Length: 293
Image 1 (spheres, helix red, strand yellow):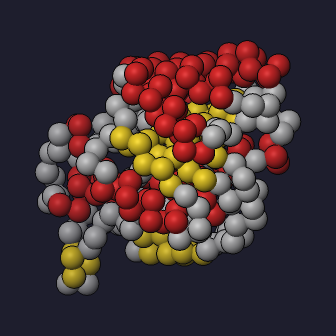
Image 2 (cartoon, rainbow, N blue to C red; image 1 turned 135 degrees about the vertical axis):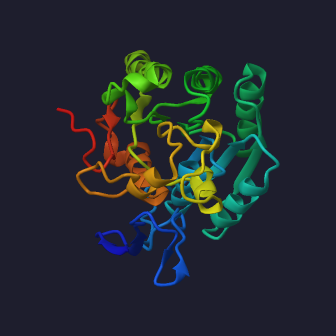
């Protein structure tokens, strides 16, 4: 089943798998949608002249943030920790908008690696205006390392944006470790905001809900009922029954999972002058899965 999703930003066909059968109409059904990183909307130069350092900027949400930042006028440094093939693809997308992309291979679990990444960004661009902490698998420790070494280079008007998830707000008993570490990110965000606001540096967080990502494409390779290793699934819960992917994201009020392209505008907003009076806040783009006051 395909559902047309329309918004003021763009229009696309959101692939929404249904049923328990592998085939539909005699043809094999691809249950994993093509991931969207960018929108058809033109940029408005909201980040013109800015330099952004994006942790985990090579794939998934990080790629969408990097590409849409470039469309808004920012130069982008990307931290990645694999063979670099995804980072090079992302760099190509950034350069299509006429912006520079600095690729930094970095083990963000090591403080010396985080320091080197910051130093190389400064060497290349001369400054950092926006720091995006977005390594979902590593949680709080790399965020602390990067912030600690970036702060001396952040001027008034700079912005730090941390990535959490909606999971802490669900209080899920089957995900205590992840809930605790994600809560730590939110507390870190608020404490850091209180510390840095006197320097004119804003600190906020984004806590997305269910979102398609590359790691989940393994679902296209298996048969109905196949058990998958838990480490093959990203941090959206321990999904190990093939049939459950058919319902991924349907527990939200909107009834479907987001694409990275849906979430990236939250980061643009928080990094821009439009959010000049916002600090210590957490945005919740989760389709209505969690509603907070």
